[in-house]
Amino acid sequence: MSSMGKATRKAEDNILSDLGPLYHNYSFFGVNNDQLPGIYELNQQAKAPIIIAYIAYAIAKSKKNAEDRVSLTELFCADGFYAMVASRLGCNRSIGIDNDKDKHFENANLIADRLNLPGLEFKKEEITPNSKFFSTDIVVNVGGLYHVDAPEKILELSYGMANNYLIVQSVVSLATEREDYFEAPAPGWTWGNRYSRKSFDKMVRKICPKIIDQHFNELEGNNRLEDRGSVYYLIEK
Image: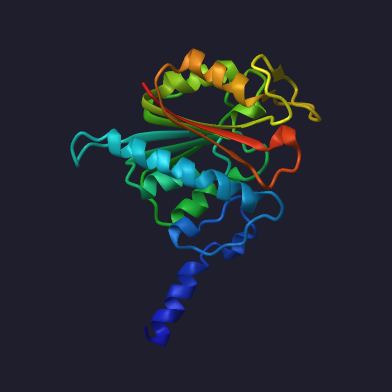
């Protein structure tokens, strides 16, 4: 590669550098960026391979013909990373929704523009059991259910929005295996909630009868047992 080519490639690699440390690492898109310190890197390494695989499966299975258009909504999208992944994987319309409480959402449009990703929409809105959102082929609810006061109602909302597939990820406690465990607010917090691995599974199966795949791993960036379990579900309608 010529020196000019190397310089161009280096500039492309660093197109997000002026934004400072970001919630996600964007190496999936061939971009080098600084990531926020602490829990973010290790937790993304645990979550991203499973969630991206589920998104790719759902997009592929939502197409009967090559020209079919596929839509996706990512709830509680933070910086919109998985909505952007869906766009790169061939989703024609990809919507990210977040209330921007933690200020990760404010750069979503700018990041998507710099990555030259088509068909993306970002909406700053609260997500409540009474929210009215358009249905899409795929709904992604990853990292949102353990933040809310009524997780069962939000799961019902998510399931109702999905025409073909729902993808769920949530934190669960490893401090107990009780099948009836539910605590709100979450232990040590003033908000959110916590299930055990078994009680969360029971809740999901009550609402979502057709689970295609599920997975469990540990979020190595989180030290407390109450915050360390991570469950994943690929659900077909």
